[in-house]
Length: 244
Length: 209
Image 1 (cartoon, helix red, strand yellow):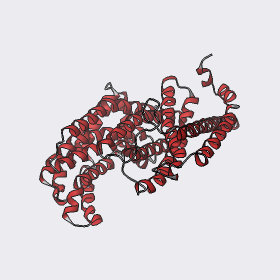
Image 2 (cartoon, chains in turn green, yellow):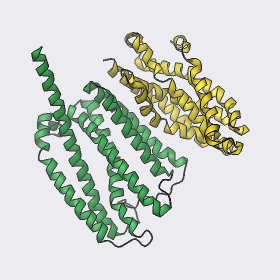
Image 3 (cartoon, chains in turn green, cyan):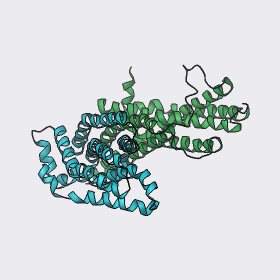
C-alpha cells in the first residue's frame, strides 16, 4: 500500500475524516499548553523584557508561512507529474492558510519591532522577503480564482508556483544585497552552537508543534471542502444534462 | 512576426515613461539634491511600469484573431515562438526605454556616471522584464480580466531584476564598484532566458487546449 492510494478522492476522504478532529484537538492542546507556558511560566528576557513573549506566535507562524509554500510546491509538482486531482486541491487549499500565516508573522513582527527597534517597519531583508512572499501568495490565489476550467487552473497555478518558487528564493537572497538587516539571525537551529535558552526553547517547540498541527488540520479541512465542492459541481452538471 | 508587432503602440510606453518621470518632482518636490538621490530608482521603476503596460498585448491580439492557434500548429517549437515574441516586445519597448532613460535622467538631475550605468543596467535588465512578462502574458492569455491579474502576477517576479538594476544605477552614480551586481543582473537575465520560454510555452499549451 503506497501513499498514492490516497490520490483516490474517496479513499482520501475516508482516511482524512477522523484525522481532522484529531489534528484539531492536538493542535488546540499544544497551543494552549505552549502559549500558557510561554506567557506565564517563563522569565522575562534580560534585554527584551516581556516583549519576548510575542516570540511564541511570531516564530511558529513564520515557520508555517514558509512551509505552506513548500507544501504548495510539492503538491503542484505531484499534480504536474502524476495528475492526481487531490494534489492540485491540496495546493489550492494551502495558499490562503500560508497567506494568513504570513500576515500574522508580519503583524506580530511589527508589534515586536516597535518597542525593540523603535519602528513598526524596516526594509530589512527578512521582513522584505516575507512581504514579497505575501505578494506571491496573493498572485497565486488570484490566478486560481480567475480561471474557470478547474484543470486549466490547476495546470497554470502549478506552473506559476514552480516559477514563483525560484523567484521567491532569488528575491530572498537578492534583498541581502540591498540592505543589511536589523532582524536577528536564526536562534533555534538544531545544529547551531548558541541558541535561545532552554527556558524559552521548550514552550516554543510546543507552540511550533501546535501551529504545524493547526496547519495540517486546516489544510485537510479545506481540501475536503474543495473535494466536496468539486463533487457538488459534478452532480449539478449531471442533473442539468439529464434535464436537457 | 517582428514587423507585425512593431506596428502598434510603439510610442505609448515611451510616453508613459516620460509622464511618470515628470510626475515624480510634483510628488516629492523640486529640490535637485533629493531628485538626484532618488533618480536611479525612479527611472528604473518608470521603465518597469512602462514595460508592464504593453505586456498583455504580447499574446492577446494574436489570440483574438486566431493567429496564435496557427502559430502553435506551425513547425516552429512553441518555446521559440515565446522567445521571438519576447524579443519583439523587447525591441519595441525595452530598447527604446534604454535609449530614452539617460535623456530623462537629465530631468531628474542624475549624476553623469549614472547615465552610463543606468543605460547599461537597463540594457542588461530589460530583456528579463520582457521574458518574465511573456510568461505572465502566457498564463493569463485566455482570461477576460487578464490585464489586472497580469500585473499582480508579474510584479513580484520583477523584484530581483529591479533590485539589481537600480542598485547598479545607484552604485554607478556614486562611483562605487558595480562589477558584482552587474554579474548578478546578467545571471538573472540569462536564467530567465534559459527557463521562462519553457514555462511560458507550457502555459500557452494549457491555455490553447
